[in-house]
Length: 238
Image (cartoon, rainbow, N blue to C red; front, side):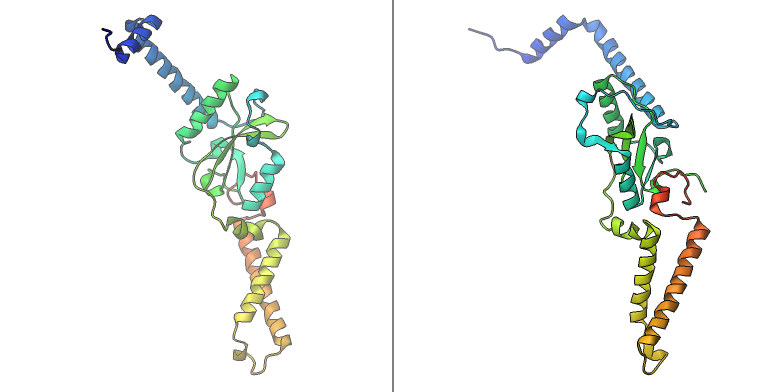
């Protein structure tokens, strides 16, 4: 008695009430053109030099888990020997997910984001001569909003491996411990038939001076510095 409902026809009917069929393709092309234009503007903004001016976010729509102060960022970079620089230093192309996150934020906050920053190891950045990017937008007053993270996680031992470069005291302690370890492994009977504590102390001091000299020579020749001095440096040999 009652005919079945063809949902495809119903869908077409709803669409025809909203827009004439002749204008559908024009509407789709216009929307896609606007999206491509917006994405191109975002890519351009990511590639420009930053002047570190905050963006006008709508604070009611922000995720508090994504808001970080410059001191938090600095501590992370020093601990893991990372850099915090303008996004235009990043090598290669930004992933589509990052562009989409920026578009989403811009649409939600009705703002054109700019002056992007990024946290990454030096090898992922195009640095001037003298494994996990985090993309930020400045909010002002030394606060930054985390937009997107991509790539692989850092090596589980990166913090430990970068600990000696954190400051001068850590480096001296590391060289001292390395000297003690080498002293223990050295077969002392090659040098003395009855080695005593004096011989071990003399050898440890000798190894410490040699290792320290090598570290100083390497550091000066490569222009290397400690984590606290390079976390926001744009120079490769820092």
